[in-house]
Image (tube, rainbow, N blue to C red; front, side, top):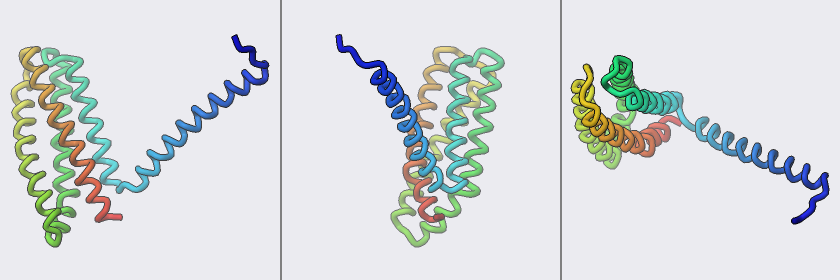
Length: 170
């Protein structure tokens, strides 16, 4: 057993707390610095992604057979539709204008549009199918599929389209 002087132990504890707090502060500062570089629109869209995912998680926990679960599912649908409208009204027009003189961006947007058409149809079909409840096992399977699809799309949007938007709007 190693005996530490009392002051050494206090110093060790203090340094651990300070270093932990500094690490948290640095992590916090880094995240804030990234957010400062993002436009207000992109910050809002990313926040909405988190909100939609959170509501879908609540639906999963509540189950589709409960009235509360069904209401949350409708909240998710409304949130998703409002989010897509905001993207259509504010994000895509800027990207489409830029794509007129950028063939690579045009190709990317065409791919994303085709992908989104399939995702939108699958999401609307899901919301329609479970608007009034449904089988627990089938719902769980369908929910996992929708959640996975949305998660992949969100990652792609944030990694490609949102960064491109911010590059065009410094």
